Length: 252
Length: 68
Image (cartoon, rainbow over all chains, first blue to last red):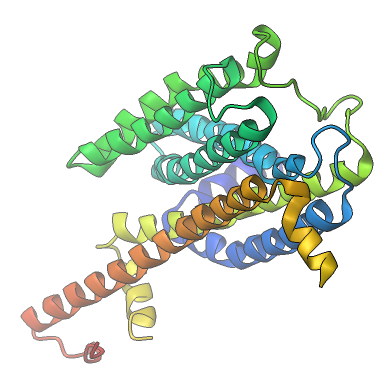
């Protein structure tokens, strides 16, 4: 009984098993992302009242903050998978780490652009070298560095290991992004939502934000599953299980 | 109609709120399409490779390639 979980994980890390597992969960993750996204956007854009200071401009929060959380969350997942990939040489961990990078880069880009669009009317500038903004930009460069390094190698597994090393070093930036608003007192405001304490936000603004947070989490799962499935097919292209899938799907 | 206009105006911040939402959706849709394209290219390539291999070995058990 005690080794049931490691055994299950070991089985799950085999590419054909994970391919089927991802294929089963992916549509559910995507459906949940769309449902929570629709609820969150309805609540955020139509039900939540305008802010007494920022008017309707604050509604950017419903995409900006969930995207910013995802930019850090995905980096943490990527960094941990990269660690597992380097220490235990598990192929699936390499794939999860490398396939997380473009999704993380997408959310980081969204965070920077929506933040800029929010900063212009509220702070009067599109960009400033504030600690939070700068560290988030560094996060984008880290993601792009991981993607670039991975693709610079002829041998894909060698590339994945080199990029995994960079991903692990870059983890140091995640707490810097998170605590930057406390460590340096510059322009970006402090955190409004607190998981373990009292959130400084009224409930009718908070619940759409939480719904959007769930939507982005499920979206990441769905996108990661799809990318991982494709990458496993490519990496294992000579194997029997891939031949079977190619035979049953390519004709459609 | 008036309430729709009021909603779209976003209290005067429409120029900032709507582009932000547009970027969010465009980037995520692109993120979603990229692996789909890669997958269909890959399947086509693997399929072609399997057919070449089966021809070389004189094995006719694979069905003919789809004409596309």
